[in-house]
Image 1 (cartoon, rainbow, N blue to C red):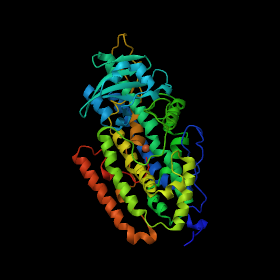
Image 2: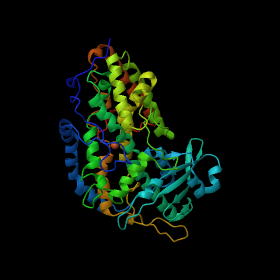
Image 3: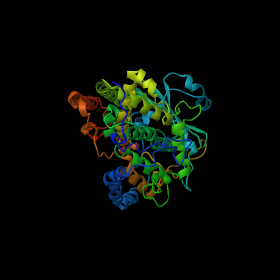
Length: 476
Ligand SMILES: [Fe+2]
């Protein structure tokens, strides 16, 4: 059978786009963006996602009053601090590789055994508003068996080291670490689950015919995303713009520095092994502890599903998949070229499985976890200068933030950070066309296996988000 060349009508939008392009705001340091989004996708987004923002905004006065009634930050014990770093989304930053800067800062202690680092160096690029402070930090942890303990914090702004015996200096240093965690989570690593996938989303809609098996498998996972991303990256009302009048813009400084955090995530930081440049992955990255266990438990289910579905491809399908991958690989670093995918079935399966995993489980769990953290313990803004070793430090937790800092953060949490699933992974409907008879049983199996993993994770205290709350696509 020869390749059947398709006509425009065989494609979702008659082959007229959407398509990736260099990101208008930052063409050289960020993922390609998709700016021209089909009208129907815009309407769909406004009806189901944008409208929720409008109603949530009504909560603003309540958020501000809550800030007034309960000012400042809450105490974070050393035990809780360690838990927050190692048993949450922040575990993504816990590494046991050290670069030359780490060695300069910490010296010989890095040679002792079982030392790990939680590095929030990206914060260096953040500029702050008057009266608000931020600092890069590096935190050392010791691992004994499966347990971590925090042994030292380095505060970059003051070039100071603090240890648990250092009183208020230590207490304040912990808030700076957690602030770095909030900034790097939301603006350095989480965006890597979002924006690089936009090119794949657009190219799948434009370059694959509707009867192509990869289109059919991915399509239910592409809804709401393109317009959401466009709103975040380009709207004047985006929280990234960080304007004073926005009741939902919680960040400590203006747009420029915040945008540089996105660049650090995408381009990586030279010589810092904790921040390599973005590259498309074929399995979830290694994450220490239970947060990693959650990721590792789900991925094989996606891989098996992709293995079951991607069988008996026709010559025409192979032809279009080759084009799809060639297009995607020009916009997404590390995405395989067509010829590589076609030569290597396992690579094709991993490429597709990772996409499905990323936009559903990988993406939702970050939101669910971060969105449920106590924002009085993981601040975005701090109003006491970073502690300096040797200077007297008195900590008044009530004065560490203003009531509107809380109000803005709480609104951002409700609007953007929390998981707000509209279409659930577990409800996903796939239309495999002529192959429905053969493949629908694998959809059932896929969902049963997702439920089984969820159950196992719950029993193992590693259910970072219940399966019923996992979204089918990037939609928040
Ligand atoms: Fe997200």
